[in-house]
Image 1 (tube, rainbow, N blue to C red):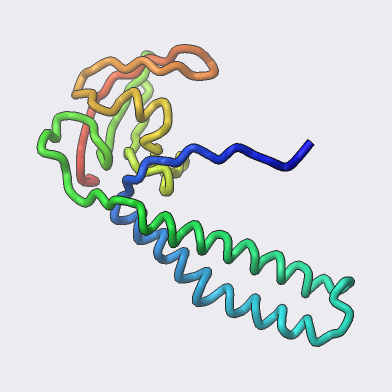
Image 2 (image 1 turned 30 degrees about the vertical axis):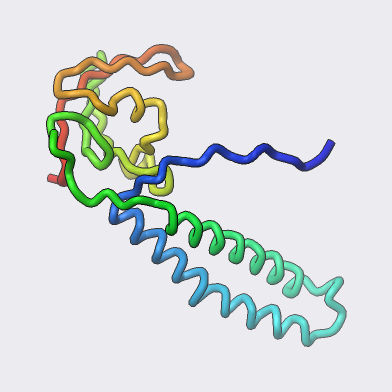
Length: 167
């Protein structure tokens, strides 16, 4: 059996200004800071002779490949993303970039911001717009009921708050 994996489906091209900045900072860190350090370490390890048993050389070369791969991805991704830096005309509906408060049937509230797939962080309350929950709430209004199919069964939420700026 080969190592072939079908290509992953592309995520949405939208990103918040904060998400774009984070990707640019990661690109700078990898290209300007980390890669030169690893390249120097590989150069020094190469001077030690037999490279076939030189752990520093082998792992350094592997890390360089990982960095180069991530740098290529970030460069391509930053070229194709579209930064959404303003609120929509209808702020009463849930669109990309909204801070949303949902309440489940038990009265428990959850707070989410709808962001692009490159910046989602569930622990930080950032929900990818490509996720099932985000797809279900996009376009909804205040007090709308939202039904989401989850692995544990059907979940029902109510939209209790929609904002386009933190606060």
